[in-house]
Image 1 (cartoon, helix red, strand yellow):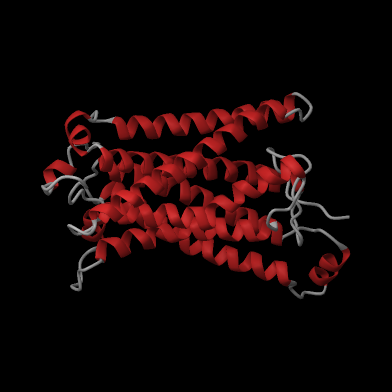
Image 2 (spheres, helix red, strand yellow):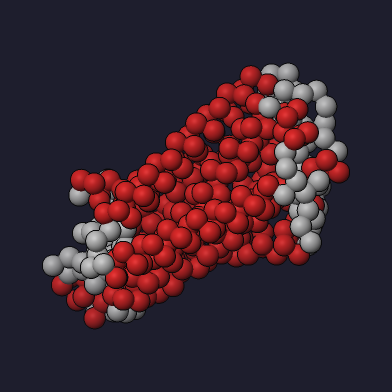
Length: 317
C-alpha cells in the first residue's frame, strides 16, 4: 500500500512513490540498488546543496559586506526563505533515503512548507512594489515611507508564522479538522498567485512600452526573471497540493513538484549575479556585482537616472 508524504495542509496526502512506498522499493533498498525515485531524490539533493551555497553567499554579501537599500532588504529576506526551504529539503531527502520515521518526515515537511509560503509572499511584495514604481514613479520616489521594506518583510514573516501555528493547532489539537485552515490558506495562496500574475504582467507591459525609448533598468529585468522562474518552477508545488486537496486529482507527481521547487529556490542567486554582470566584461568582486543588480538605475516613465544615494535612502544598521 502506497504511503505519501505527510502534509498538514491536505488530507489524504499526495503520493510520493519511493518513500517506503511498496515492496519493490523496499527490495531494491535492501539489495543496495537505487530505483528511479532514489536517483531523483539524489538529484534534488545536489541541486538543493548548490542552491543553499548560493543563497548563503547572498546572505553573507547583503547582510555583512554591502550597504542595503529598500530593494535589497526584500532580496535578503527572500534569500533567507530560499535558504531555509532548501535546508529543510536537504534534511527531508536524507530522512527519505534513510527510510526514517514518518513523524520526522512530517515535521520537516511542515517547516519546509512555511518557508515555501514565505518566499512566495516576499516575491509577491517585490513584484507589487516594482509595479507601483513603474506606474507611479514620481509618487514612489517622493512619498514612499522610508522603512516600508523592513515593515512589509516583518509582517509577511509574522503572517506565515501565524498560519503555521494555526495549522499545527487545528491539525494536532482538534483531531485533524483542518477545513477552516485550508479555507484561509487556500484563499491566501490564490491571492498571492493573482498578485504575482497581475503585477508581473503589468510590469512586463510597462517595460515593453518603455524599452523602445531607453535602456531597460536591471532591477526590472531581475524582478521579471525571478517571477518567471517561480511561475514555471515554484508555483506547481502549491497548485499541485491545492488541486489534490480539492479534487484528489494528481495535477503533477509530487516528486516533480518537489524537484522544480528546489530548482526555483536554487536559481535565484544565479539570476542576481547574471543581471549584475550583464553588459560588464571586466572581473569585479561579487559585492559590486550585487550592488549593481539591486540599484535603481532609472525609473520607467521618467527621464532621469537615480544616483546611488537615491537608491540607498533606506538602510539598516
